[in-house]
Length: 65
Image: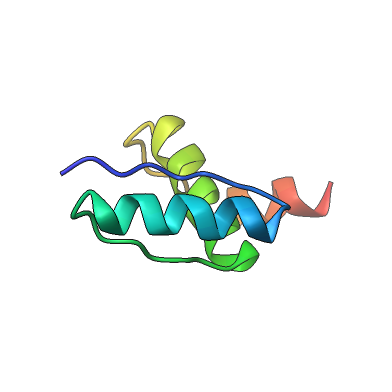
């Protein structure tokens, strides 16, 4: 399964693209700005994941500085 995310500020474009996708037999789901941010943050987190363990005290120290 492939997912395509299109962001548009024009409601007419959103409606047109939604209708086209449905006519092609694809599913359409609208997501909020918050959900979009969550997806992008998760993607960013995955891209920088090192697999290394970091002690909680080190994290707190870095946040305080």
